[in-house]
Image (cartoon, rainbow, N blue to C red):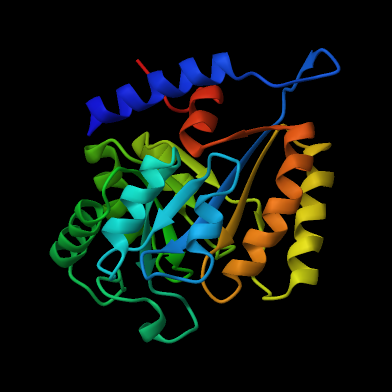
Length: 258
């Protein structure tokens, strides 16, 4: 896995160099990474989003009917693939999590088994982010187990920031695991108007920040998210370089390609 990450990051460095973006003769120094969650269950918007004119980071849930198909398709289309690991929330039904979820009542041995099995279930995965997970990401003991596995298997971690009490940053820093944090959700409200407002917020935030990570979803609002992103991606590209999470980590010198 570490050798795979080495090859991946070398490739990203080379292609990033070849595809540097310029506006009015000046190189763009802003970066936006768009992550799309909830692949793996033939969800609404899957094909539309995978065919958007941008390299995405595609988060695929494990053990679902199209887990393998979606991960392979995303990889072949040039997107980066990560595991969208279901984790217990503070509120919500366990049925929303799907199979193989990480819950706080599991033994350490079962958590280790489930995380490794989930990684193995998603072809081409180079990182992990949490599906739901407000209860687990605030649990230091469980996150230490998960992030230790990330370190052992050469994976990075994206904290989706579903909880203000998340301990990911603290534990990942201590263990030396490359990690990033989500800045914005496009579609936590399932309406075109809200998704457009969030896309406009992204455009404004580019002027204030050097790097931004924004998360959208396939599923209930998948076709709406795809439609809005198709409209806004050209505007984003005029203001920032669109990158995958691995590219962002390398450029931030959090992930060492060597």
